[in-house]
Image (cartoon, rainbow, N blue to C red; front, side, top):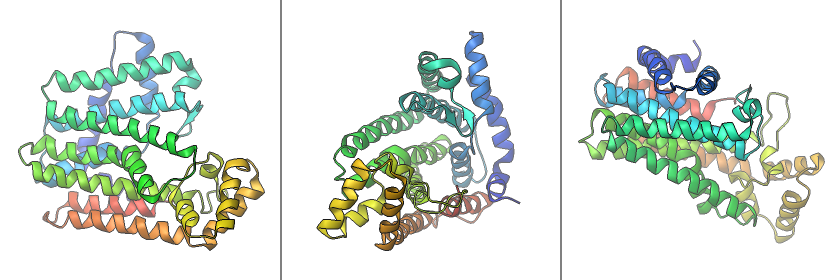
Length: 326
C-alpha cells in the first residue's frame, strides 16, 4: 500500500464525504463558473491540507468529527484554491499539477474573477454558520501568505537574505497554511481548548517549515530526469542551502556566487557549478539537519496524545513530508 493511502485510511469515509460537500460549496448560478469549478475539482492534488485537518480533528476528539470539521476543510480548500488560481496569474504559469491552469484555458481576467469568487464562497460558508473562530484562523493564514510572498519579492532583489528572514518567509508563505489546517481541525471539535488548538497550530507550522526545506533540497538533488533542476537559482530564489553557503564561504567565493545567481542564472553550466559548490560546501547537509530538527520538534508535540490510528497516520504524514521523492 502506498504511504499516502496508508495515511488516508483512518479518514477515508470523511474524505469521501468531504469531496461531495466541497463540490456543493463551489456551486454557482453561472454556468461558466460551474464549468471552471468542476475542472478545478477534477485537477486537484494530493489533498494534504484536508488530510491534516481531519486527522487532527479525529486525534483530539477520539475519532469524532462534526459538521464544523467539514466546513473548516471546505473553507480552507476554497481559499487555498483561490490563492493558487491567483498565483498562476501572477506567475504567468500555464500548468498546475500537470493540468492546464485556469488562466491558460480561460485567460487572466476570468482566472482573477474565479479566484475572487472562491474567496468569497469560503468567507460566506464560515459567516453563514457563525464559525467566526474558524474564519479568524483562516484569515490570519491568508494575510501571512500574502505578506510572505511580498517579503520574498522585496528581499530577492538584493540577495542578502539572512537565515532568520528566510525562516520568516517560509513560515508565512508555506507553513502558515498547514498550521491553519491543524489548528482548524482542533478548533472545529474542541473550540474551548485553546491550548490544544495552539499546540496543533504549532505542530502544523513545524511540518510546513520542514516541507519547504525539502522543496529547497529538490533543487539540488537529482530529479526524475537524473539531473538537479536548479530552477530556484534560475528564478533567483534564496533557499536555505544557498544562504548557508553564502554565509560560510570566502569573500571571493561569495562574490562569484552572487554574480552567478544575479547575472548568469540562465547559463546552464554556471547554474550546475553553483549547485556543485553548494553541495561541496555543506549547504545540503546543513539544510537537511535543519529540516530533521523541525520534524523532530513536530513529533514531540504529538507525544501528549494517546496512541490511535489518527495519531499514527499523522506521524506517517510527518515522515512522508521529509522522505517524499517529489
